[in-house]
Length: 472
Figure 1: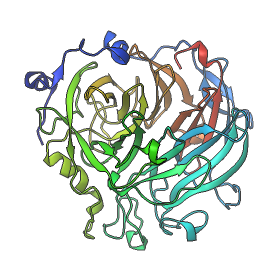
Figure 2 (figure 1 turned 60 degrees about the vertical axis):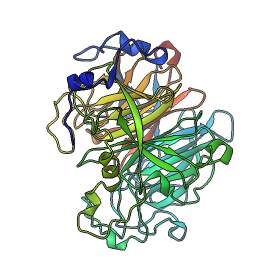
Figure 3 (figure 1 turned 120 degrees about the vertical axis):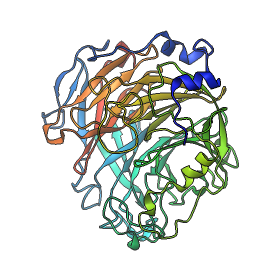
Figure 4 (figure 1 turned 30 degrees about the vertical axis):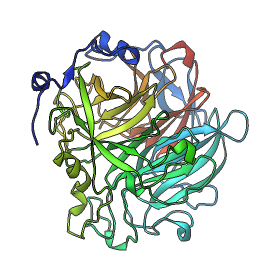
């Protein structure tokens, strides 16, 4: 791997002039976001707000906003003795009645011990403890129905909604009977299927439990569909090694096929003219890179059963052998007006001494699907400003909502098109201190934001209020 800093990018011609791109990026080029403690947003300062479910304080929010928590993990739930924990990525779709929504929700179960929740006979792998649940909920968090929409998978972390009304859920693992045990301590010997795939879940139904194998077997994090070309963009959260940014080109446009078909071509992003460009380091807000794509020859490898092989990035190494770029722990991903926004949780200026690949507090990138250009839209200068951004969602106004995954206070932060970072919500639940926000998703009509507290005893929140008074 080649360690390349920003100066070498400029010398190599990989970076383009800051004024070269117009349109959605214009605001980000006005200058870097403020450095230091975040000031109040246009919504106003945060203050404790009681949960409308039971009156307890679980969030700090701006004035005028309210919320209700629901679907607490480890409680009986619509025929299940226990609702799975670790709610993570999710998406909201228009529901069966006015102001109701189908909410498809991941469960990032970290161990295969205990087996599939729900009907194990229908599971992809009876020993996989992850999957998705779907809930029918109104704009103020009142639940009327729910069901298991996918089971028998593992580590369902994030994913992405599709324009045709489904959720793509991603397994953040490469576990299977052909690899050694991973860090969780569970035995891969009990698994009957390979894992590390993307699965499609219809908003109002149940998944066919068939993985999209050509979209790769690697530690998937999130997904975003480009509705123009039909391409699927994928992030990789390879905790111990470098991560990649991927593009899956299905054999037929998924809108015409009414789903994401298997059998397409997987590719990995490369900075044009620079092999293995290291984008995990401080690059500078507004810096851009011309890019191209390299093909992955074997997107669905077998691992051979070697001990600790579950940590070997076989797919990513194929791309890096052809010069693909290096990132640190890519996580959240969303599409907006021709741009794919995604986060690098531990990229950017060095300020983090924890474990994993990368020592920064976080970066936000945007990839222009028309111009094949990548822009650094934000880099965290320190944990007091932005601490390990994970999931993200882009509002209709183009403001990016970032879910923090730090070790202390965690916030929902907004990043405007002018590059201004602001605090929107704080996890104020003392029983969930240090737990991350995950799965933020706006309803199609913009009335409600749903988000999870990602823990084994976590829950989902519905937040509503005067959205039009601010940048969301």
